[in-house]
Length: 358
Image 1 (cartoon, one colour):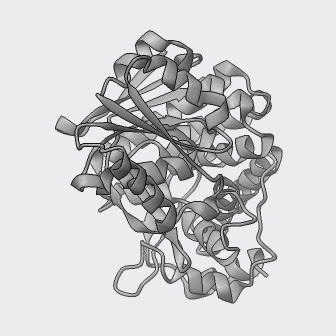
Image 2 (image 1 turned 60 degrees about the horizontal axis):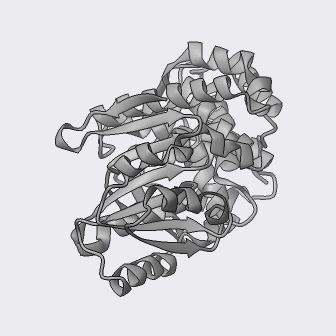
Image 3 (image 1 turned 30 degrees about the vertical axis):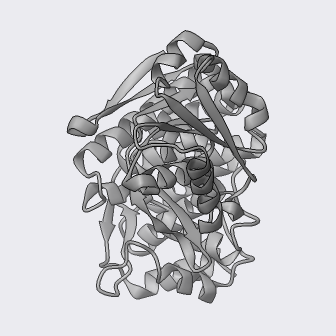
């Protein structure tokens, strides 16, 4: 097991990374030591891993809140179901929620923890690669709205993150590939050497090589933890973590969160951000091609021809990076050199939309 610290003063917390962490009941009991615990999971993950949490909690009050699986259920109605269960079982502010699952479960659980009695503790146990490298770290919580992704939410940091690499063995290949899109993102943002490493280890990552996955998760979390420590509430550098997400969220919104996984949409969005960067004259076309090749090697989609460009543009107008009516993008001056700007040629954006959308 390795550990990183998200340094936020009195709200600092560890990220534990390793294989078999859920099987170490004595250690896990120390992480989940509250009087009462509610394990929030879904119909896919709960049958696989909820028993490990209950074993660690042996003899102490523990409840399961099992949600339907999928991004379509990341709604206020599902949030209300979690709150209802906490009220029914008389949870207090000093009790604990556990998010056992992927990004949807983590975002919902964290938002419930932020809202219930104006804030209670929660622990993230992410079981997808995407959640381990991204959504479980940093305290962004929330739900979707038909008008846009993550429009309702709060910043609420977990008490700890437990990333058990062994859980990735039960991940469907499509979910694994979707998580790798977020890994690629970290190399693009600020670590060209990590991008090189991903290119060199694409096949081991897809083959679930434990050493490769551990390194990918550790380096991704280290990059995110450093950025969150500098800018917890996205007033500056943290916006870099949204590379590819403005385009990706538009894909998800227009398609009703039904046909694209989040990581798949991010992968297409990464290439779109690279295209816009090249159209604006900032990123070499050769590096755009290099990114496209890597995404294809990882089995990820790189365009959204079924999404009308006009609808995608309308969805982007609700993006959280809009300031004074101006849409800002995370773009790149090259691999490992991302930046945020609202100063891009309008024609470059229109060309990008035509190249990647319908």
